[in-house]
Length: 287
Image (tube, rainbow, N blue to C red):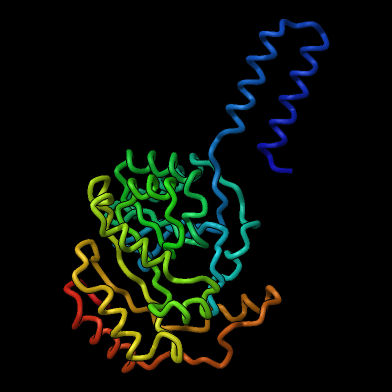
């Protein structure tokens, strides 16, 4: 049983015991209120934590991989983060303890919340992000951009950088690749370019794009992506991520059929050409 729920149950048993022996009702009410406050401790569902990363934002970073994602990308290399159940529940202070322990390493980097999809847990992340912001630690989220609720907008007001994953610029291809349309992801980008964002926090973003032969590694799509990203003021970098097959064994271990069976990684020449095309459209870094 979850330790927090067990503690809560024990507290309720104490309340009943107090009531039966005739202790003042006021004591019982106060004790019950304390139980409720304890139960309201914000917790997030975490898949795993990486204490030293140089691939998830600027500098050396502590990366918290959250559990749960509403996309099911055919090439996902962390399919075990897709189910919303799983992982472990962690309280704010446990994450803060990780930050304090790694403070010397991440002082010129920060913390990145990846997944899974962080915005699925936006409401519970807000109090944690507030605390991290007060500590002066750079906050980054790696997101597919599908969710843009008031809670997500509030969360973004504490975020320094969004790694926005544009899986495919073509909507129909995006649906086939992820199971979801791309319209919401593109709307997230427009929000990050909006006056509303600039007014509240002016959160910057990088676009990350997995380059998959036969899917995204087609020149007409690269040109379309470049055209869409032209003249974006808050875009700091475009990162091309060459497709790989490192997640295949995880799919098999979960009893799932791998979605891109037989697809090979792109050639170095193909990746270089894609970067060249994108660089012709934008002023930001392309790597």
